[in-house]
Image 1 (cartoon, helix red, strand yellow):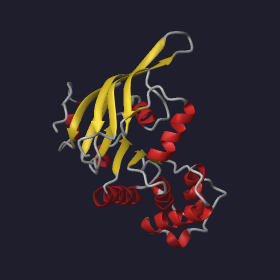
Image 2 (tube, helix red, strand yellow):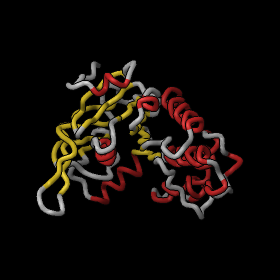
Image 3 (cartoon, rainbow, N blue to C red):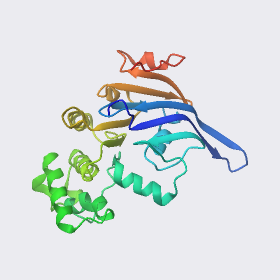
Length: 248
């Protein structure tokens, strides 16, 4: 099954209407596949289009043209309700600012996506505690997010992402709100999940030192993919003109 991509983006374009009329195009014919077990960084400077690409991958937005298949399902023409189902069943999200509910304890935060699946309470609690143990925070289930450090909050966010047992984790600047020490711990943990559990990870970042934790880099500049391949030895390789096609 490794030859069948989890993510298949074919000639993806995205345009946004402008207030004064006309459109602004932010993605141009982006084409790439992500296969099971990969750890991929989508990298680029601010305004490059990487966040728009992430939103399409995460079924938070749809392309203006092109075809996007997730687990073989064409989600390009799905309704908002269908997209919500795809997000809940297939993808675990890890956000830069954690997105934890401040007035709910840690266990409740992790159980939230399971509630939308309609699972009984006993099963929700079991899964949440299992994932808390996985991230090393089983003793903190009654704590509120405000009582935890930034690194601990991000581990809770990872536990929540894993609660539904997704095969794909989409991490949006997962270390952006952390200091370098805590950030490195989170990156090592994501790499461990990828290596030991085979979870496919797509990480959005603008920093080359963070992208080094992945196996492959897709670099986007002005909406175009300018590099797709192994993590290079230096960042300057990513900024050269032309596209390096990934060799399988």
